[in-house]
Image 1 (cartoon, each protein chain N blue to C red):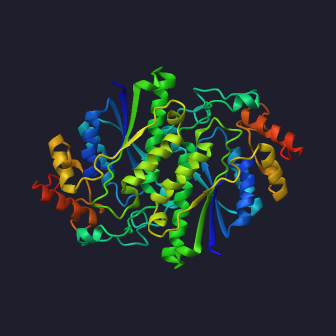
Image 2 (image 1 turned 30 degrees about the vertical axis):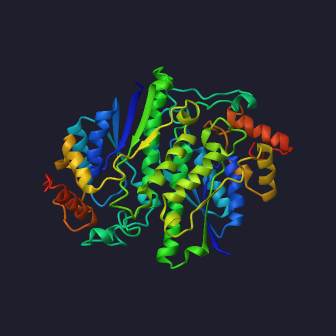
Length: 242
Length: 242
């Protein structure tokens, strides 16, 4: 079996916490990456740190707050110009691209995680002397197409083209023939399915944080809180973070 | 005619200096972006600033030195572990992926430039009230497939898939139907062709800097100096930067 070298984007939310548990179980080595891009609060970063520690995963937090200045047209990064939506029904949340869309955020996040993963794979091949045939690089992202159908970069067709971009744009894809796979195992799952999977795997859901607000308790009315509550309710599970 | 909103990645080298001149002439508004990713020296950044000023183009320099830490496996960003190649013949330069390859650098650069461009276009549509039909967003990059055939991310097939990724991953591409084009007009030109084009357009080639070394004069022996010298020689033009 080739050595599976994994990289995961970990926000510290419900979905990426569940996925981190899954990815840890199916990789030989896993690095979690959390990107601080100027969210409205730091409680998400703390959640990511606690989740990684609980799972025993190597973890890096990278400061990419410069991204706010480049891609400022969003409610998640520019609190002075936009209000966050609140109190909406799930059906309403799922229509249109919301004001919380950050220009090309997932493309940016994937590129950074992919660069880190490629660097680790090149290290294994060119410095440690492993053969490319013996390496299976996988990039995990907790994208979900159902609840956030409004986000263009949460859909399967986007991940297909990103995979091709990362193959054609990388040395491991073009010279060594060991392109990375982009794994999105949660993409077609409902929030209830994700809750059930997280519980089944023993993911530290109590440590995860989904609210768009700064805490110390989840607000209960933002899009993210509402979707989470609906997921736990439909799964018939009590949210251990509440 | 739709308003052409342009964005260019400007390194301050010969190619991007020529392209900046071309892009300025064919856009209604142009923003140049220079990314400081921990090159070995700052003279490139100074060259980019001077070129933008000479052309009267709005210009931003963004500090992305964190990228070194993420994608460290390269001679351009890690001087402690690699030596830069020197004194090689152009035919030798054009084979294989060189040690100066930085993991997914062009993908990273394009994503940042694209995020900035999308943000500007969203601003025009959602804040200034322009219609999407009236906007033609173009992302310029001075990629060249001939002299640097070793780099995977300098080839036309890479730009085709990047264009698709940026369409499917963006709000302007999926909701507004005004996806950005990625323009690579230099991709199949020889260095001599680029020199001739730069001279024809009146590009400030004297201000450009191509050497991998820190100056104050170009070293004359690195891959980049050798390709530049060959280009000027074949074009029958004296290099105004020497």
